[in-house]
Image (cartoon, rainbow, N blue to C red; front, side, top):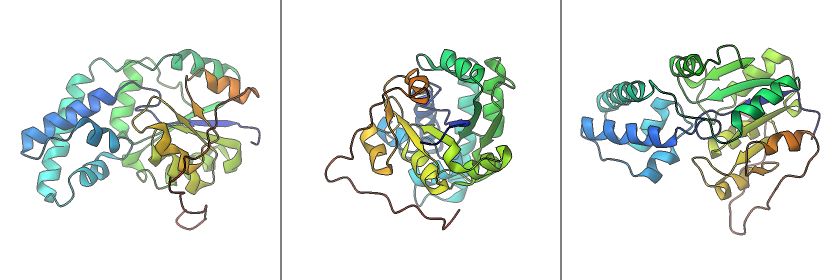
Length: 239
């Protein structure tokens, strides 16, 4: 792997232990507007997408008016519960602080809205901590690579000098389409075995392992399980 200058992180399920809250709000909102209540697994499956894209995937065929009402209900309940931000996963905060002190540029690429990300950063006292952030409602939702392309352009870096860290196949596909190395985590919305076909350089078991990796340490990089479908070859098409 080339020398990394930029580290790009997903938020929900990678840094923030927010998955239970997201699923709970999806379930409450669906019941409120008269749609089938999704299971926990169904809710976790769409984490990482922008909210309109996530709801359309979760309820294919639902009328636009119903989806708009669902989005409003979800946002209202999430803001209510978000008065106290979800905690970071173990070793996240201290590792981020150490990486920043080491001189890495830190960025976030998230399916959250700009308002939602700014709210949680302010409540965590982390305004200005990340060097740049991109949200789904101001660019393109994952797995389109535009978020990463914009960050690379901002820092004037080639893709091989950045690393995407995420917990979903949407993160992995986005990075692959941008030509960027990617790293999965074992504790997020999608099981690690679902990330492997996208050929991450490894799977973190603890967030603190990231510093070891960047310093040349060993990292688990399991082979793709037999029978798993490989993603399409990397291409510049659609970038």
